[in-house]
Figure (cartoon, helix red, strand yellow):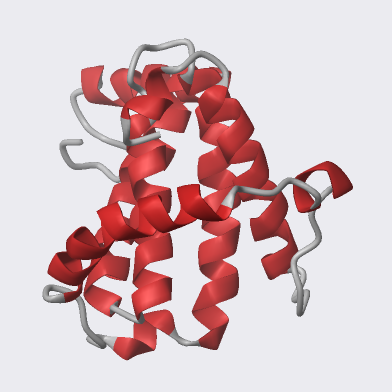
Length: 169
């Protein structure tokens, strides 16, 4: 979704549906991942896998130079379920975001950073992912009817001379 694949119509919905399926199982504490039989039976030819690994290996080694086990409290066991729940929320934001060109990049980038933080046990990447998650969830507020109500409420408060606590808002 952060890559050009996110621009293919329908691809972000399929990808985030799979993300939500897997993340839901993590939230529920499943020890193994269940996938539909059609996905489990799909095979990728060995030569294609080898080609892809050979092409990505230099990039992976370069990225590994930046990643490490930092702020490990953010990547412990309880956080994996919290991150999975956040990934479900972000996946849900993609559905209305597909109506706006390239709007899926924000929740998609947040999902990517959260997953990378968990996989590499890097709390700094996790923290960055949590910040981008805030932006992705804010996008959701802007795209849903609740977001419209929230915007009009805050506009009403700003128009008042004094805020709800007696001071300027």
